[in-house]
Length: 329
Image (cartoon, rainbow, N blue to C red; front, top):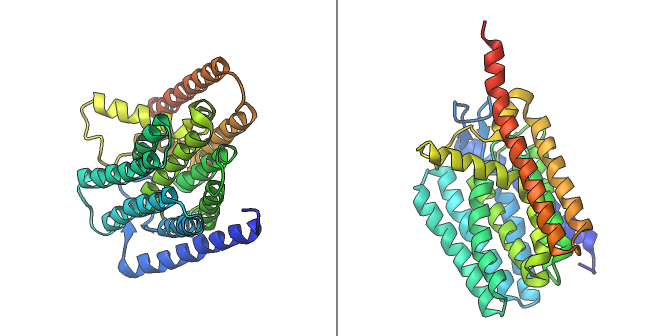
């Protein structure tokens, strides 16, 4: 990004903003609306599918950098992100089987990991290249439930990746950040359009792929620090999903049991999105500052961070029960 970083960022910010505006007009014209309900966290019908603008900008950046390189890894990044976005776009128009969507997610992750292996990445990077995109695709989809939360968390996590990326990969990361920033004014503090499956899944895939590229560049030790800014989403999604499984619930169906959803009902969308952002940003700061620290210090820090996040999850899950108990006569 040495030649014209501000122009690069401006182009993808504008793509994100103009694309989101166009996606909103399209969604209103096609009546692609998320209606309020007991499994939703919003109170008015809202268009969906605005994340297509983020996807378009990110895929275009990957293709441009891949051709300029050339780079098979960036081509695989663009292909995988596009595959996940395509199945999400169809699902936004006509709901698909969750197992079909998961199969496409796994295929996209497998293609990306296979290209990493072919290009000589280490075994750890290849493993992360399959698991991280597959897992984060679904986590970002699960966690995209209140105004601004998915895009703001994505911006923070991708910024955390920057010191761990090299070559054209940092330019790709900044294009993703810029596209998210172009989308955010339409989604926060009051959502005029939602990201939709087309955006949330592809965003999670792209972040997972960037994590794998960070591992390929710096090794597992350095990139492990990136688990810190990911903690708000990983802990909330992981513990909520585990609890639903243990209860025998249909864990793949929409619900409002995540800690951020419970908190949003009590405090509102904006404070919760900002609070999650503060926690992720604190993780980003620690990851940047301590990236050269010893393995034992890193392990202790991750254990303390995730233990604190789990305690916070338990507290947030309890505030609704406490409120209901105090409200009874």
